[in-house]
Image (cartoon, rainbow, N blue to C red):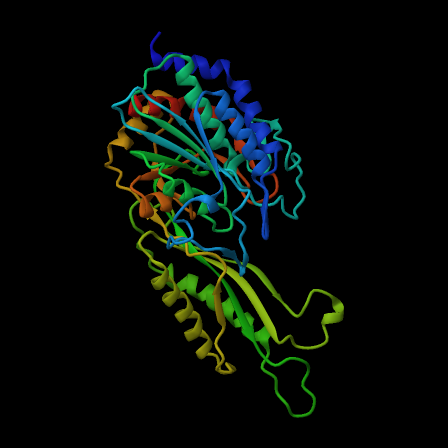
Length: 430
């Protein structure tokens, strides 16, 4: 029996243990809900698992890392409120090879969004329940599966005695949600830079050399408060905000009228925009006594790799302002545009890099189709590709309902990714 067969046999024998560990991670909340963050308890579980598996373990909060606050990516607020970085530890496990081989890093963010206001019907949000080939719970797909898959792939190789020359590094990082990036950036600044990295995100088994980016904005409009008595006409902030919504919709139509997507985005060429929150005029009936002085919305505008913050800002805000100028009722006062988080650029990596050959071989050896495509979302992969010497690809299993009720990951994809990752580590680091 060769090493690939030993890998498959080991994964088969340890399948239930793999799913139980992933369920434990899901059952342990690591929710970020600005202005609070709560990854610590779950990271302690990760730390203990890394130590049991024989790795060199490094635990540190991003705020401890020299150079973080001076780095151009540092953005210490979320929607204007202080973003805490203390007591939010990254956990890194280093498995040393014999020497002389290529190194690989498997990166996963442990933080999740809250359970949300929608009812969970298939399973409780922190149950980790397996049902009909799906494992349910907040973070199951986005992205605690990556912690379990990386650890079990390395355990597999160590326990079957596979020889590795290069180092394998596992990292469970904090502060990815809500445009963080400080966790993955801190690990790069701490010196964990390797020959190649896989960033865990839900790509439905598509190997993504490229991913989108985008900018998130709080757009505030102001007008005259109260009600008009007599001949006075009021500048209505609600109407103005409605025109901003129209402008964003028209912005989408115009920029997607003749899409010319870069490579890997051909199958999904349209760039979306999302109006995610609208507010103004208070939140109780007692506040509804007249036109509000101020209204706002929060919008997320996606971009292709290669679009920087300045170009994105100029194009988006310029379009909205020009749209308002064409309105006969425009009062000449432009909206206020405030970034809620840092701009998250898209990024890409050259698919001719030798690592892709190892990855393709691993997929085919595990009996899974090898597909190249783009990740249609922003991801911390850009920190590797644009701000470190380590190129990175985005990869993950199928599932559903990320950031929504009944989030789940496909069990068979998780199991197969252990087989794939073990093979790619063996091929790349062996």
